[in-house]
Picture 1 (cartoon, rainbow, N blue to C red):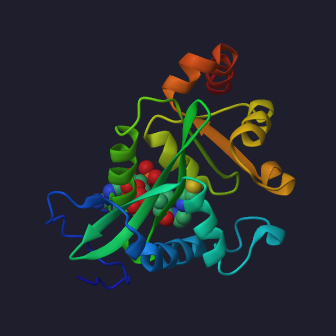
Picture 2 (cartoon, rainbow, N blue to C red):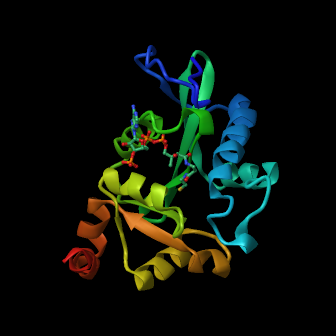
Length: 194
Ligand SMILES: CC(C)(COP(=O)(O)OP(=O)(O)OC[C@H]1O[C@@H](n2cnc3c(N)ncnc32)[C@H](O)[C@@H]1OP(=O)(O)O)[C@@H](O)C(=O)NCCC(=O)NCCS
């Protein structure tokens, strides 16, 4: 139901709202990503802003490159999506997006918790350095930022993004990644908090 702020209140009536996306969901995934990505306008560097944020061809390429999307569905409508992409020895969380009208009601959190439980591999996620809300969101679920030097290395090894995007991004890792791959990195994170 719509409330006065334009937000759609989620009823959480469906006990099992998360499902893998199918080819027929392409249009909905495209719409959700480009609606939710409006949050970046005026936040991410101007030279990285484009509309739509993710053109159809790019989304198609991401799926072909192995991003498996999961969707949060309410009354037969997808409200949020999030992807998993195994790359080398880790799994990446890719493209976390919840429709603007449905944000801050726990959909992203439920998707992230669900996807975390889907893999035993260390998890990494990248986002814009300026997207403070996204960084806080991942930190709430146990992810911690890696050092700038390690971020550059990880973006080069696991992502395929232009150099300018590397400069303006951060990488967060889950506790398993810190345990398996990065003693020094764990110290970096603890050091930062002191
Ligand atoms: C980031 C994003 C996917 C999170 O999805 P979401 O559904 O809004 O996430 P949640 O509702 O689970 O959590 C977000 C906040 O809402 C709060 N929240 C959760 N349930 C809530 C509820 N029932 N009522 C009010 N607030 C709630 C959470 O505590 C959290 O707050 P915090 O970040 O201050 O701790 C979504 O905001 C989005 O699409 N943003 C734009 C695109 C983006 O930044 N994507 C990330 C790219 S990597």
